[in-house]
Length: 110
View 1 (cartoon, helix red, strand yellow):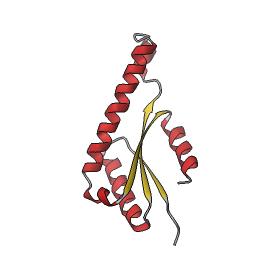
View 2 (cartoon, helix red, strand yellow; view 1 turned 180 degrees about the vertical axis):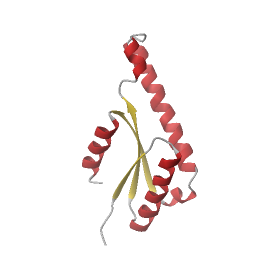
View 3 (cartoon, rainbow, N blue to C red; view 1 turned 90 degrees about the vertical axis):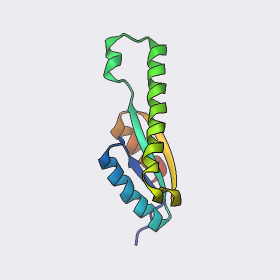
């Protein structure tokens, strides 16, 4: 048997992410592992390319996106009563999703 300590579950809050989260919950419970439920907010949404927002406006939009992601985490976790039995940490990251997720994987040895 292999040892699992940390599990990263990238989410876009879709039904498919819920399926992945359920599988991760099953594995985490069986292995007494911690789940890092993670979402990446794109660093520069297309709307910024329009130059309609100054730097402060861009920061506000990013902060609002991060806040909204945290609310979505809460909703996603509430769907699964099993989540009460597992150590879950949520992470909102900014950047390119694939790069951020792989960087987290290396950091956590997940």
